[in-house]
Image: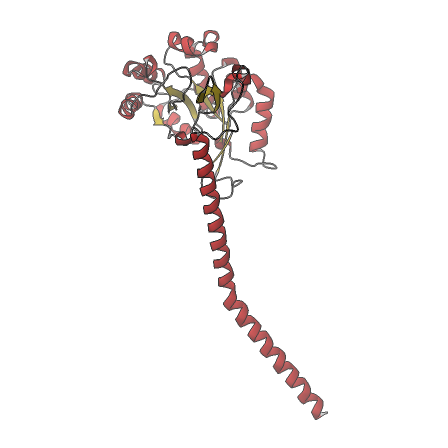
Length: 318
């Protein structure tokens, strides 16, 4: 995924962010991910700053350490989602293979990898960690779901796990969808208190800003609608694929549901606004050039007439 920030040119190094994640595990596609990251930071190609490239992983510890050896310059994000091993094993299938403490240690090692050779004793104090964390981020991503993993006790456990490491903890509000599993996001006050508790342990903790939820286009809201047994507009997770809805007579991908109508209207309004802005900007730029061109034409005409007059005068003298 490539994320663009700002209203400037999309290939401006100051505006561009590259975040490598996927429906599967990026580090299980290690060679291609490394090749893509190297292309991004290559001065002869994308020429992006190292700290604007991030690889996201669910926590394949050996590959995380390999990434630290091969590309210590890029950022690394760990999708943690639970503060202890039993909870994580219940919601993340691969968690049984990789202990949570080992993963966080690997993430911490990645953050300090560039600074380590510069220290004689190899010991990182608070000041050294603060310095390196400004240059390169190691991030923990934590989904906020109403339930066991978003309690204040979990906030204390998460804060303790990251204590004095200067890691970035990114709390991700769950974007609700009309799927079979009825999950929801905690209240804003609960998330802010969770954030405050984690921050009290010395980590930089943020709550991700949600965008696109009003049109079901936010993170995790890739859905398709279907018509089943006379019910229009029921939603299924797109990751289930078409096999989950193959028994239906129709797939309402081409029917206009309320949601698709809303999206179409928003797109059409945005397009009209863009056209108006382009037309107005075109007229303004054209009007700016009318007066200078008129003056230049007048001067050129005057010079031409004077030159012709002087030429005739010289001929008469001869």
